[in-house]
Length: 131
Image (cartoon, rainbow, N blue to C red):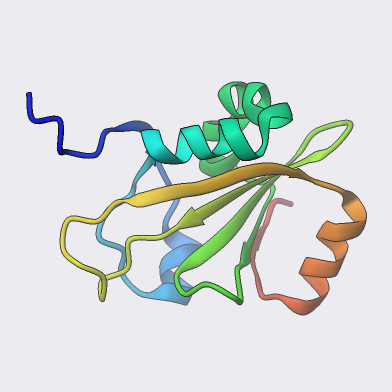
């Protein structure tokens, strides 16, 4: 096995309908997380790693809300509301203009308070909101 290859875990397929309306055709529906990004979540958000293991994939694959990350091209916040908090899965999409073979990839994951979520919603484009 070649140890130079980055390793990742496949989490399932995104619903790309509303994403492609905004960003154009995506290279794939597949959503992954690189081992390096999982380690980032472990290091930078240690209090959230258990939530990620439990809800990370579901938060991205069946979000309550999807918001365009205005600061990073081709990136969205996928928000899942839990009774006590909101989960934010920051996902970089594999756009048609990117290098071939890219996959939609989770960049980071953390909890976001209602107050902060409302601020983001106010100043950003909401692509999807669950009815």
